Length: 163
Image (cartoon, rainbow, N blue to C red; front, top):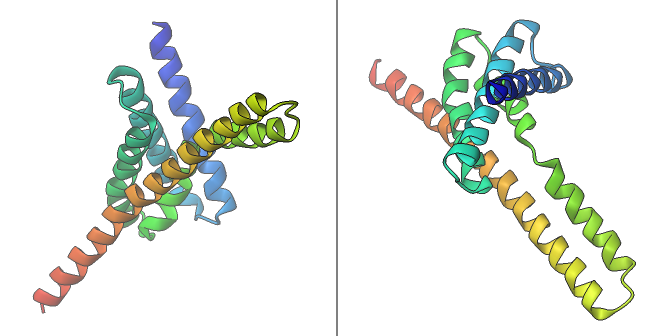
């Protein structure tokens, strides 16, 4: 029962964060539902893959972003808005601030190192967390962008053939 409450809380928080980023990005009010649903979908997809399937955060983030990209095309058509305007605010709740924070913390540890061993440990800390953060962000951008571009290409081909 506690796990179900945790998942529901995670879904609600991801939806609210997606709405917040949607309002900052100037998404129309009627498309906030789409941002919230897609943000919750991507976050719960990543969480489920990591927690229950044991998949690494990089691949889980890519699959979560891929699901946002696929459903953003449908949601954009439903709300008569570009898919990007719904997908990118929904992608932002999946951002991994902890890895970026740890990378910056490692930089501070490097500056305060008293000996070479401490410096090398802090340097490893920076490199690992920084690489994970960069690769996860790149995989999320690719995951959300690929389905949207494929959808637009297919839509254009259908329009050209239909003439």
